Image 1 (cartoon, rainbow, N blue to C red):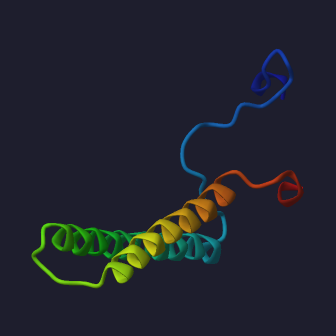
Image 2 (cartoon, rainbow, N blue to C red):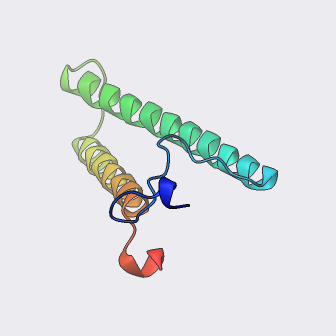
Length: 99
């Protein structure tokens, strides 16, 4: 038993992906990953389309009201900030959530 411990007496787990022992849990993790990838792809598509509209408007290829373009830009920044906040909170949970 002492062989698997370091000098400090702490186990060092193997590096790599965490495998779920329960098949239902593994399925749940897989579903979450697929959902997250699809939502991020959809978000990226929406942001690219928004930038395309703003660039086309800037190059005078399309005609849009100034207020709409400003709102569209602000909404895109707000969505991006919200998504980044969600991602950072899930990557670095507070101490209360870890317990």
